[in-house]
Every structure is written in C-alpha cells, then in structure tokens.
Length: 228
Ligand code: 5RP
Image (cartoon, rainbow, N blue to C red; front, top):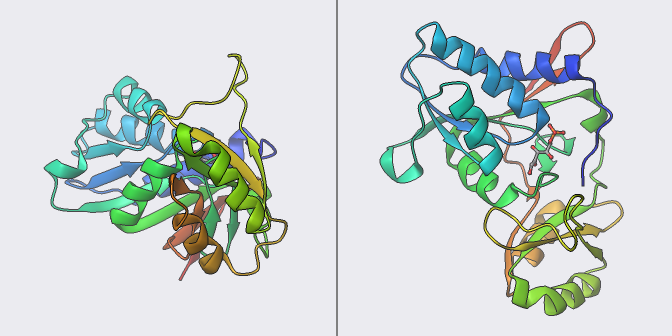
C-alpha cells in the first residue's frame, strides 16, 4: 500500500541530499521505492564521475535500478560493514517508521539495520506525530489464516495485499504474502513490533522502531534534515 501524495521534486531533493553523504570506498544499502530511486540515480551519476562504491540492494527493483545506473553491487556476506543505507518510508514519526509499501521491508530491514548510518528519504506527506499507517506484515503462505487470526487478536485489521496487474495476491521477492494491518494509532510501536515478530509464520513486519539515524525531507524549496 503506497502513499503517493509527495511530488517528484520533493522526492528527488530528498534522494539527492542523502546521496551527497556517500563517499569514496563506502558500502551503501540501496533502498526501495520511488524516493530511494532518486538516491540510486544520483549515486549512479556520481559513480559515472568516478565515485568508488559498492551497493547492497534491498529488492529486485533496487537491484535493477542499480544495474541500470552502473553501480557495482555486493552482498552482506562479502563485506565487513555497511557504511550507510538510504531508504524511503511510508510514514515517519520521529526516528520510527512504517515501511513495506513496496513489500520489500524484510530485506530493507536487514540492510538498514546493518548500516552504521541509516538515512531515511521522504516527502512531507510521510511525516506524522504518531504512526497510524497500516503496518505491512510479510507471512509465509501456509501461515496466512493463523497469522490473520493472531493479528486480529492484537487489535489489527489485516487485509491481504492484492496484486494490481495480476489476479490474486502480491507475492514478495521472497515468495511470501503481505497483510496490510490497520491498528489505528500505534501508541506503543516497540510492543506491537515485538508482538508481531513473535507470531509463527511472520517473516517480517514494517515497523522500524527507532532505527533511523537521520531523516531527509524533500521540500518544494530545499531539504529539511532531521538528525538525532
Ligand atoms: C518499500 C518501502 C518504500 O521505501 C516505501 O514504500 C516508500 O516508497 P516511496 O518512496 O515510493 O513512497 O518501504 O517496501
């Protein structure tokens, strides 16, 4: 489920601002989505001009974009550390996020959490005082009914994400299904995150609790950088 209110210019400013943080020799986590795509494009231009980096993609989409933009790729098991990750978000409250609008949150969380510095790129429509965006939950296909019941018991309303140009559900890059779970206002994201993680059959959920180090918000006339 995507929030599509931000403008292309806002997203571009956010993505380029984060890409400016990348320096020679860095290993860079490459996020997924339309805002992270601007960072990948900017990094591709910098690589073209001689910047020496290696990227770790978080999805099929970011891998394809990185290849198109000529960014050399690597994997987590081939590096000692990830210097920086740049990724989008569906909603941002402080340094806690809802992610997974592109169903890539499982790999995104692995790479973003591994990074020494995790920079979120967003437009103003993503900002909130309190999280209330439906939380994506990736589930093993066999666990769909039991996880749906458990999410309801936790106070959520799970909707199986439907594909748009295919009959049936969205299937993630990992071969799983996604529930978008409306919990209303999430007053205690840490508790909800651990309750969701504890459910058998849940692969990953889209609550990124206190994980971001910086948020770059693209505005109509510049970028607002929020740091801890
Ligand atoms: C993908 C994500 C994206 O980063 C999130 O959906 C934001 O995307 P966009 O920048 O296109 O609004 O979490 O799983």
